[in-house]
Image (cartoon, rainbow, N blue to C red; front, top):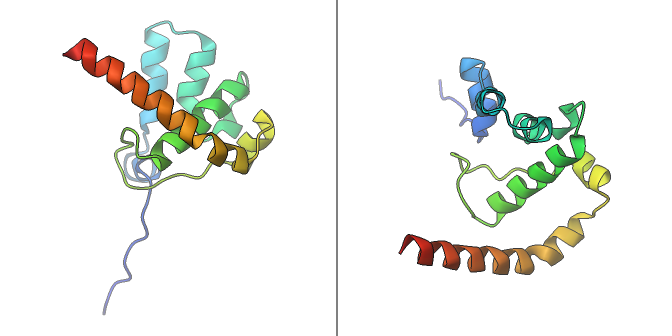
Length: 124
């Protein structure tokens, strides 16, 4: 009997399914212990599922979009190869269109390249 190949699963979903604890929950607890503001705690806790944010939802949506864009552009690592899509709720909450994100990618890439150059000089 042959097994079907398993579909790619995000690290977040694998954490939740396998151990019942996600990096966002750990981040939330760390942020609380460091006395970060409630806006940052919300952003950390809900950046994968921003519609779950009961307060300060806009910042959770912003971080969600930033995470998705960074993953799409190959910037940083999320610990897996799954590139998440920006949620429709985030587009609505922030009043932006997916086409706008595509248009902004060259500017985003330019800003990141500049920041990486500065960081490499500082680490030098």
